[in-house]
Length: 475
Image (cartoon, rainbow, N blue to C red; front, side, top):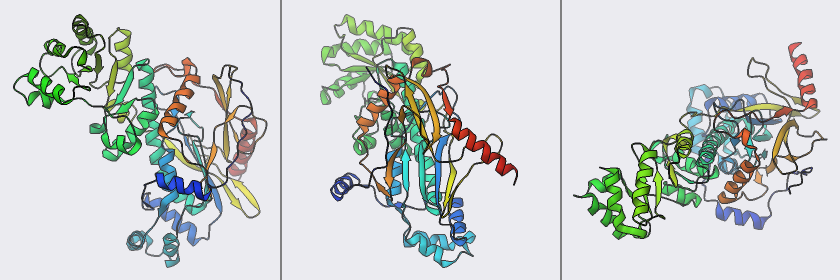
């Protein structure tokens, strides 16, 4: 029985030299360019420098509102964000490029010298990858000299927004599959191959069993899956010739694609391979009805262990409909709908200034603009659970606020620009997501008409925000 209790959190010291050596041996990421940002981050950086604004500042990333039909998020992308922060810099060519931009014509040369020495030296608090999160909750907090914290905004948003979006979509699809395996098939439809690689990673975090993307498999150690396509069958004079030729080369892993011509006739041809045939794939037509007919053909031939894989523009809703109709599908290959999150193709994550540290004071910061107002102060998210470990509510409080029970979700992952601990393996992140989803009650994770999980701001944070709001309105 899970026993809830207060969670003690702390920012760990930087890694020892031995730990750094071990971590560096795993990290093959080259230097990351400081140009991986929006121009206005650099114009603000130049403006801060010109005005001698080098105070430490805190920014928080959060999602203002969840997309349609989404009731939770699966946090992903932190590892890539930290690698960027660990290695971001500007080289001579990049700084010279910036010097030549007309917008920087009146910027003092000292700023460009500053960029040549630029390294991220700040502190990062973040929710671990695989954590379930909700709207308004800070997923990540950056505390660093103002220029540093500003320049890295674009990369952090791009990385965490995208991977969190895809991990969440994958979790919904896996939930709909009710224990049947889901394979990420979306590389050909992603918005560029770089996106495809990280979509595969995020989909695995969300619960997929593997990917068709070989590069992602290589980079992240993901299981890779694949069958022959229609072109293989079309390249042979007869369908049976194609089936035999493929099985001869891949006797232990053959999954035959049945719908190049007549799906049911292809299923009958497939029975020649008997128990040696690992699976068949259905990629068009009425998948539910065809699956039933193909299953009957295979079972009659004594091939009860031969699995049926379904693909063809599947999503969580289509999968739920197939299973509700008792379609005997064992695996699902999901491409476009998953890897582009086609029904909700962008996540509205934002990165907002919440505090600035001056020598004699800390100034909280907030926006007042309509529909985009924010909460000031550095924050922590506390998650409360019941006696069985099920999540019951979240409280967003000030980071140094006491008196809250449960688990503190943000932990210190970087200090003085150095990682405080190695990041977990991808299978460990996937397992965390699985465990977190198991603790989220059913009514909050339905694929449609899910209830909103209870999230509230602490009384003290509301009081501080109201006080600051009045002060700003009186200015």
